[in-house]
Structures are given as structure tokens and as C-alpha cells.
Image (cartoon, rainbow, N blue to C red; front, top):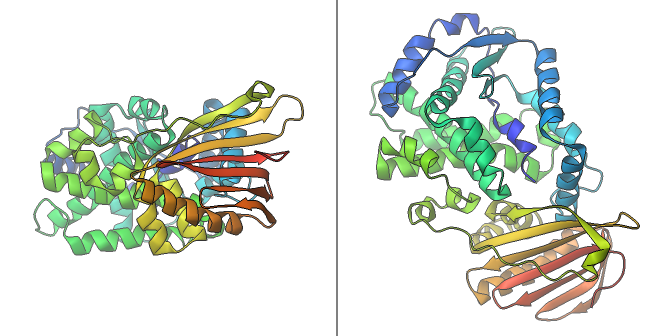
Length: 405
């Protein structure tokens, strides 16, 4: 489900202006990054300017080459059935619009080349920092092969987001560390600077019209790798020092939960993925897609429709989640089966109770046929649903054309 967002997350959020005046600083930037990480550039990083039209055409070409229309459709339908985007949301077009609006520089790990948008000079430190960010990607690629790192992560939706958080978070942390070192500080990022950087990532992106109008899940998915990934890198650096820059690539985090709670990554605590609930008349369906959901999805879902603080607290108790999107072979209707395992029966019960509010929030029309302490049944905008408790797991079947029993 996250594969389309990979294109978004490989672009710099900070604007770059008049790169010709900055390119001469690349050697000193490379030297500074090497002194912080202990990793040397094995060769010079090629770079080129690109117009906005060329940038848009390039991204459209990459999406077309990497993703089949059926894959994009499956991602979009899954998000809609979960309630993370509205029913009329166009995932592909929205992604293209976000790319065109926000991208100003990116490192292409396939071409091994840095591209910068050619635009009018604005001046300021942001341009320099964004170039350092992209050079940090190039340095990581020369040692850890980012293309393979990304491809390996696509085996798990949640794991893919975690790997993007490593890439973008480390590059963002190195931006801040480089600046701190330039002004005479130690090779680490002061807490005040971390807070300022996090706030800047979350607020500067909001200045863009397309981003501002996007659903909360799209906005969170875009900023998560930069902001939360940077905080993750900082925590790992505090524990492992220079070794952290290699460790997070050699042993990639496997979930957004490990990014949000670095102590789980350090403790090697991986998600416990539950079995999916049995699907009635499964032979009548074909699978459109499947994957994993993580704390990020449940945090957005719960904070969107319940209470923000309560949603964050509850989602942190997730143990693991899986989903499967199915299409009826005859009428082409789609249904979603997913299961969420929690760290205790009490946590599962709390999530089950909160999901009542999620159903009300994400549905314009909601008819409850049965509402008990362990089971919810009824009909909503997307069709009939059944949600039920099974120990520390909550099972979901949603989007059906006829009632479920």
C-alpha cells in the first residue's frame, strides 16, 4: 500500500534556489558529512539542473514504469475502505500533484545522480541544508545501495515506511548535525535544534496548497519519515554513536512502531502479525492485494476519529496487523479483511470500543444491526461489516454487499 509514497519520500521538502552558487560547496559538504559519519565518499556525486516540467514528466515516467494501474487501484481502495482517505480521492493524481508542488531536489539512486530544480534565487540557509540532505543520500547509497534497501522493504508495507524513515531521517539528522558542527558544536544535534527541525518539517510542508488539502493520512505519511525518522536516528546515535549510521541499514527497522519507539528496535522486538479472519465464500473472490498495517495507520485512524491523545496512546499497544483486499469475480465489488493484534486483551478491548467511534466518523451512513461487548455488525457507506474480538485480536470484515453473520 505504501509503494506509491516511495516517490514522495525521496524528494526534499526544503526549497533549493540558484544551485549554481551552491554546487561549488559540494566538496566541503562531502568532507563535513564524512567527518560526522566516518564514511567516505567513494566517488564524486554527479548533479544536474531540472525544470519543473521535466521534473513532473520524470516522476510520471517513474510511476508508470514501477507501478501497474491495478496496484495503484488496490492501494487506493484499501485506503478508502480503511477510512484513511475519502471515497472520491484519486491517489495517483494526488501523488503527482504533491510531487510537482513539493519536490525541489532529489537524489536518484537508480541513476546515481543528484537533481536540483532550477528556480529563482531566494537566498538563506535552507538551500544549503537541502543540498546537504541530498548528499547524505548519495553517501548512504555509495555504502548501502539504497535501491536494494528500498526494494527489500517492499515485502512489507509497514516495513517499507520504516526504511524510508531511516533514509530520510538520517539525511535530516545529518543536515542538523552538519549545521551544529559548522557553528562550533559537537557532532550531535542539540534537543532545541531537534525540536525546531521537527516543527519546521511539519509546518513548512503545510505551506503548500495541495499538501494542506490532502487527507490527514497523506500528510502524515509524507512528513513521518523526515520528522519521526530524524528523532529515531537521534536516539540510535545516542546509543551507538557512529555505528548507528551503518546499523540502521545493516539491520533495518521492520515497522513504524520501531521508528516511533526506538527502544523496540534496539531490543529487536518485531511485530507479531496475526492471521486474517476467514472470508465467507472466499472462492467467489480474487485477491487484489495484501500487506501489513502499522502503528502509523492506527495512530492516524484513531486520532482522526477519536481523541488525539487517546489515539496515540492506544495505537502504541499494537502488536501487528495484516490485511487482504478481495474483489468479487462476478460483480467486481471489493471487500477488506484485516486483523489487528494487541499486546493484551485489555488493549484489544479498548481499541474495539474506540472503533465504534471510527465507524461513526468515517461513515456518512451507519446502521448498527448488532452492538455487543465483543461484536459489531451493520451497514455503512462501503457496505456491510462485522468487527469482533477474539482474545487480544480484533478482526474486521468490511465492504460486503450482504449482511455478515
